[in-house]
Image (tube, rainbow, N blue to C red; front, side, top):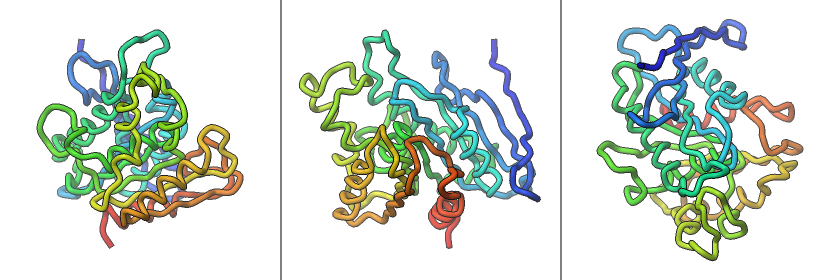
Length: 277
């Protein structure tokens, strides 16, 4: 039975803003995969108009989370209200009782989302040359990896997986040298090559696109030092980047935490790199 495509209209929070059109549970991975995507689109596009797109990657320690969590809804709605197509994805997670590794399939799923946006650019009125990514926590890690990894970590198939920029919300970086992670199904001692492959610090080079990194000082899950390490690696490589530390912000926040409205910062970053000057 074909899945039912739900198209909803959400009233924008900002006064005077247009409604947002949402397509729920879009099949972007193909037959045999349960993971789907939600699309956030400007409600009233004009004929011939093209929008940059942003892949939204949820967190959850690579083992939990969902594309329709509060943070992802906040990000997707904000993007669509401001002239972007947001694609919030579910991807392969490490189950508690599973034995198979989920890395690098989780990254492959993120890259497949980029290919899907390009393949469906005409219907969605997406500009296929201007695609970015944003993610929180484990999703921040995957968004960064989507930006900085090359063809050696592309999934099978054809089509470019390259993106123009990424926003990393408090993603783990130093974890890959400090702790065992469930998505590998092996310890650092058993599979050091996998941990090295999944570490952003392994892949940073001068050809990487711009990255905006956001982290809160009250984060008790991923230390600020992780984001500082990524920023330092990007600096050494000569990659355009910005690290913004938000005083008293906890581990999980969306674009409107009580400490600071981050929408101008994030939208300004995407506007610069996806819409041009």
